[in-house]
Amino acid sequence: MTYALQTRNLVKKFGGFVAINDVTLNVAAGARHALIGPNGAGKTTLINLLTGFLEPTSGSVILRGDDVTGRSQNQRVKRGLARTFQINRLFADMTVLESVTLAVCERRGIGARFWRPVGAHGEAIDDAAGLMAQLRLLDVAHEQTKDLAYGKQRLIEIALALAAQPRVLLLDEPAAGVPTGESRELFESIAQLPRDITIVLIEHDMDLVFRFADRISVLVSGALLTEDVPAVIAVDPRVKEVYLGEASHA
Ligand code: ADP
Ligand code: MG
Image 1 (tube, rainbow, N blue to C red):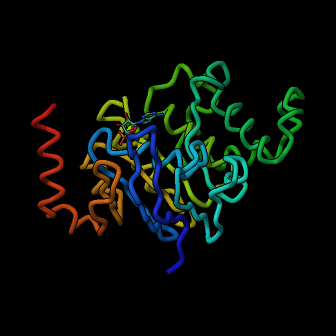
Image 2 (tube, protein in one colour; image 1 turned 90 degrees about the vertical axis):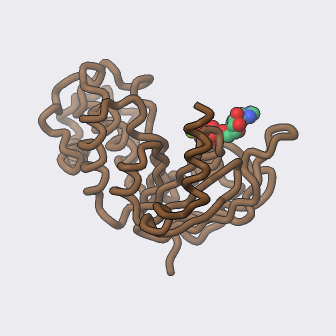
């Protein structure tokens, strides 16, 4: 088995609070691997440890066979790791095509010259158009990102992440705040991404998780409760209990 992303005995403490407790995770190359668990379980913290945004208290992160625990976020991006961009911050006044082209230019190392006419970057535009076709964004190519429906904006965030040509894509609740009707379409587009990109997904909507994932890890209070194929997770009484507990305390 080839693994795209692994952790070994990962621990993250915030002061005396153990947010991630001895997590050993193996994400197979090509997997659609979902990470689920109640609010506060540590899912986002784990993603932040994977990207290098946070440093672990102990344990290691292995990306495509290399120990990257001491590596910066940028170095991990160069090794093929990507997470979704916060688009609203950066590209609100640009069109979809301009935004995605800019991200492609950055990967090609020509970002600093982007003030040149867009026509000077023919290959970058071709790449951008390819990404937009993959995510079914071509029909909104010339609209400003801020005018788009929220579901489309999240797809652009994914296009921007894909511009770096990642091998592993981390999606932390890509459908958060997206209306139900749009989230299904969003997930259909994500599901169509090529299998040479491994995807790790955090998602609250269990219907979406079970439709999308081929492997599910369940995180509770910072520790892994279990990991298996969706059909097994769906009938695991411990998993049900965790979610019933969350619902009754809501
Ligand atoms: P999830 O994404 O599963 O909802 P988080 O990873 O955001 O959970 O948070 C896990 C726990 O760690 C929560 O109790 C949260 O309050 C705590 N936590 C997260 N980040 C910090 C931080 N920077 N400092 C202190 N506590 C934190
Ligand atoms: Mg979270």
